[in-house]
Length: 431
Image 1: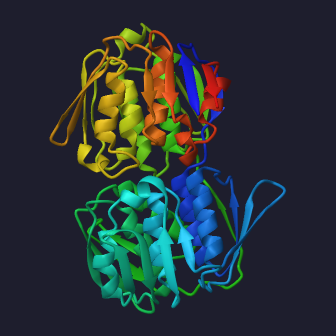
Image 2: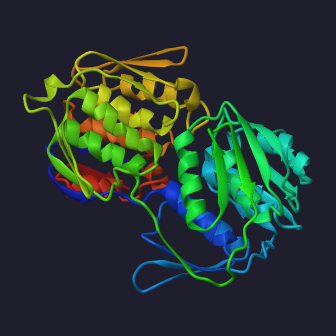
């Protein structure tokens, strides 16, 4: 699908999408809960659908309720259905979180994915699983992976520098299987706010995990009450919401609802950059009102931002920086190599087509903004966040922008283009 976006003055009120980070964790917790879980405000992105498919393959039932919520019923059997395999789609969180959970089973399970996930390194499992009495076979550190448990929790040390998602999976699996206190020591943990979100969800479902200053985590056994229903409401998504907020900062006054300013989500930090850039913003408990600077778009100032713990913010930050009058600097480029695309290079190449110079130097990205963007033919690179960043940047460019493979947004925010249209943006979808 191709999407064409023309310069637009946006306005209106919109509710942010559902957080796939929160939704996928809720699916994992519901699978591990022995009994019924009601998930309210469920997501419908491709990553969310992959998580729902996985928990059903591992024995849970999922049914849609009249009010739009999902009823998950799990008996903690974890015996894989069908051909004994699960497919994580393109979801990095699903592969890293559900693989340790699937290893609670004593059955042989093959875990696979699609698209860019087939190229992401999974050496972590080869290194750690044998320590937990799990048999593991991988494709030279890539998918598919074949495992056979059951996982036996024990004190271990892991490297947290590539992704915190591996730790999330181990925390869930250890919490379910632990019969005595066990500790996971983590070296160089990245994306700490995502671990805060994991621990928040786990606590809600009754698990007991002590965070020892992010250097180690002690998991204590629990006695879950069988069949006691749990009701969990999925948060609004700061990762997707960040694009809406940047759109408001550069293209018109809007109100975004559904984003909790007290959330543990890492991408809430987008507010720091928007404030530093000088956009007009009012933050309330239930809504955020945002617009360009009162004196005009040229008043946006360059900013310096460390995105090491929130690398998914790079694309919306680049869209914002492109309109800031000067050179903005974002730290944390090393976190971008193993995303849906190599986002550092992809952002550099696609935004160059729109007249924005981006310099990559060591762990820094420098964006020379305020030079005037021009509409161009760009490509999503099959990366949802690249597609959204180009779409937002197009809102105040000179001329129209055409995004090829624009359907990449379905991975996290399938309603994104329709939401821009609701904000009065001139967006055309061409199948």
